[in-house]
Image 1 (cartoon, rainbow, N blue to C red):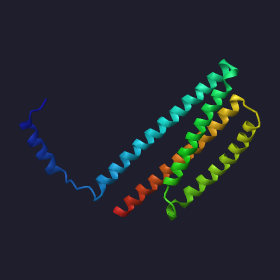
Image 2: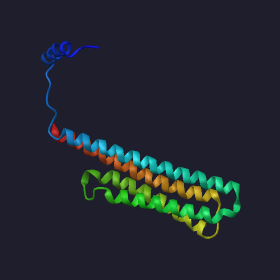
Image 3: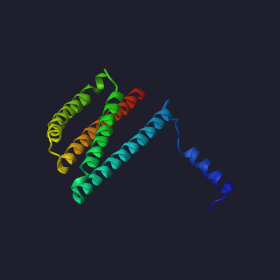
Image 4: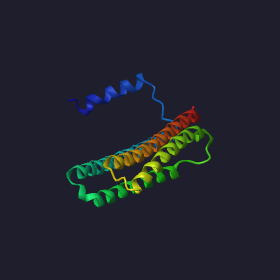
Length: 170
């Protein structure tokens, strides 16, 4: 291991050999913003993991005993509420009336409308008395896909923001 006195000349030699430019203004703030967005992504992934665990428990409950239907339905409704609120919150957080986001937002809205239409048809079957575990799984998977679309849209907007900031700094 090198001692401090041996390191100083090495640092001085490298400092003379390479020209170092200060980072552009706002670099630290963009870094902190990007770092905090990664924390949000990890929380979202954790929430998907929790939802997947609920789904697995619903599956086990369906195979072990048919008389626990009310518990399954309650778990389903809790999961449904969770996913719908996540999708709604993330959609509300999206920037509105920004021209550079209009194409990805329109594409995501088209996909979400198609999934919501499928979800409504499946929910009608569920409410009419078809309480099959596969239908419950299909409903939850539909909600998961909706959440994934919104998360992908959020990531696309972050990429557009990053590219825009980089272009502004040039």
